[in-house]
Image (cartoon, rainbow, N blue to C red):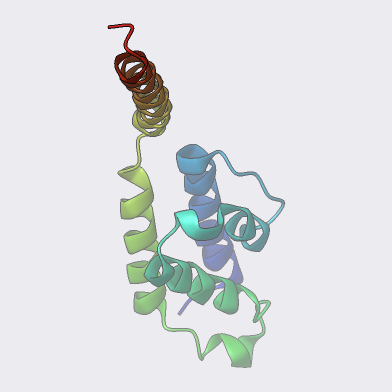
Length: 124
């Protein structure tokens, strides 16, 4: 049977992993998930919300009977596995390479336009 402490430990582990993967900070797991937004897939958002719902029972003994410990463990494992696979340095490098590619394309487009204009005007 799950206890409020074990559910809180699961929420803390996910919150720490969200900070490591995306750099989001929040006072609680719900705030961190809100700041994460669409960077976390829907199915994993649902898994994290499952832990939030269990956390919402607040340690009430009769309500805690409704919590399925194996489902919470599986949800936590899926979220942590996904978040551990995210490399912040690679995402940052990919972003800057995309910006550099867009700038290079625009420069080539302008140069091609200038060459075409010079050819059309008879200067080449």
